[in-house]
Image (cartoon, rainbow, N blue to C red; front, top):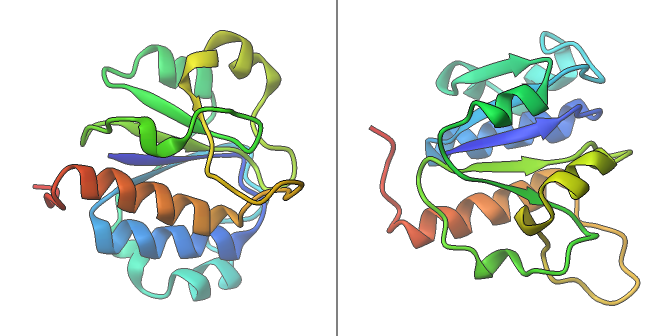
Length: 151
């Protein structure tokens, strides 16, 4: 399983997600451009020493990555209507999250409308923090797979 962060802007969120990846055996894909340098002190501090325990891949083209990905993928968005818990996740799925400031590109909604899911929130709420949303999604997917560890 992989978390994909589309053009993340806040290093502390990415660092927290690295920690979640480390304790769950999930890989991380970062889609450029990033809003920070991954050697940045704030990012390292937020991820502590977990960076060495996580397979991190940086890519420049999400569309090409998705076209060539052999498994399923899901986009997490506050604009979606399908509940994230309705999905039956597999261990090779991609869990894709948009930028903290601009979300996901509009063309993805057009290309993959059935791949968008959301997390329930109170009416008129904007969105969850990125690292919290990623943790919720990973643990739901991992729970559905009986907490099987990555080999």
